[in-house]
Length: 424
Image 1 (cartoon, rainbow, N blue to C red):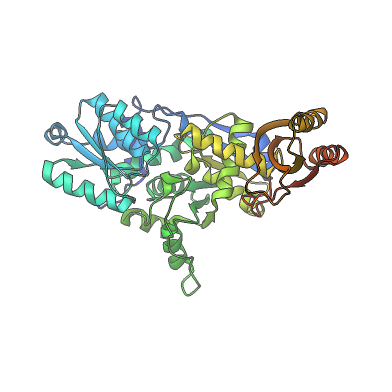
Image 2 (image 1 turned 45 degrees about the vertical axis):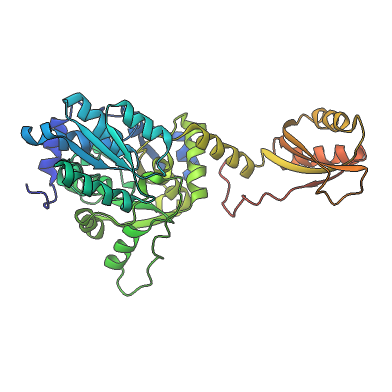
């Protein structure tokens, strides 16, 4: 096989043997609770349980184990927003291969530090994946390093395809696979494997609304003449693991020919899916890892009553970011609320307010006073509070108690709360 030939099922099976001792055959388990919520049977492939918490290890290990020894001794270089970087760094260290990783400057700190921890030289360059890629190509030429592409490489695609083999061996009755798409290596490998084993299986790709390259390619190929989605807007996204402007050329061919449906999901839908997986399955996933569940929840009618496989493709997320996501979802579920209270600017006012709030069983998460910028008379103060509550009815009781105590109170509009139907 040359570097421009897509792998077939035989190459994916060979990859599975080649990397069997290097990666984990991760569990593929039914989530009954999420299935009840979604209205279908959901089977989760826990690729966030790989050593580097991402499926990217599979392709990286397969590519590194097929390198010519002389090439390997000179070293390898890769460009990645994080997970491919860690996969290449980890398996290069295990095999004694020098590794250089170029990462965009927006890459989460946890992914940068983990990559360095595996012994790779990390170069932070560029404000986009494309800019980082350009820097990587320059370094590769200067240092004569072999490039380990994150997605557009037959050995990478074959390694990722081993996930499809495992899922259909574990749950052969799967009707549909829903897979996150960035550069397309994951969905290409899985689609090739799944179609060879079970030709009638439906394969759905998922992208974020900010990065639509693969969606546009699929839409133009499968629905010519129809209006296409807007071009990628770029910018920060919670799913930086799939924040790729265009799919690889090899993967694009698979996406256009083997993918049955593509869907775009919003940042809010990804946030909700992340919190559901944490709350129900007690598993941490990054934004890309939650994209599949977000897609199923977005279009429940498509999957109703079916057996659906999802790949939790990564779990590398900064804890502060995860905390922000959890707080935002609590606000959507009306378990956090903000109140603005008019109170006399005198000793004891705050204590009385706190007593009324506590008497209704609510907890004060945050409190601040505003005098200079409040539209109130001089001897009054505006007190802004964030409360932990049990829903709207509970909040109504808190407000009634405050009003009954002589404190004019209003609920502050939660501008972050969009039109997303909240799944509880």
